[in-house]
Image (cartoon, rainbow, N blue to C red; front, side, top):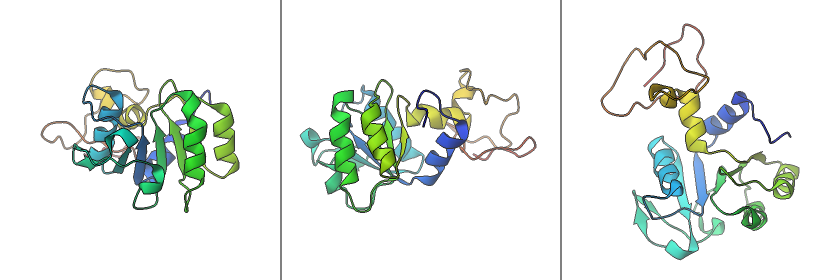
Length: 182
């Protein structure tokens, strides 16, 4: 697979299909990107397991940190890697040792390891590199468009129902006449 560019349909299918996400390298520090991603995905209905051996047992944003992928108490759909590229092969090996295996290995912005990606794909997993699921979810749902960022899905039509506070838009594809759901 070409990992330099991903079709929106590929990203949308991943974000639509996964329900449980283990975030390897999650942080308890609210100023860290992994914290924002962890909290955001949890608020969007994903079951998130922050994985960081240095933070085991700590609870942040209602999520309790665990030490390894093997410690996640249920099957994992996606492993989101917030580690340096040289740590990715070890994370992929740990993910491939799980039974059942996760469906997706997702490497965050700035994280790419082609050999580890090829190994995961050879085992039947989908792989995304150098992308952020929070950004992709926001872009595909139109949330980013509402803040003025060019998301390639920006529309002049407002959702039919506007709620209080931050809008929770869906990543489901929209037809030309279908309303957005909030």
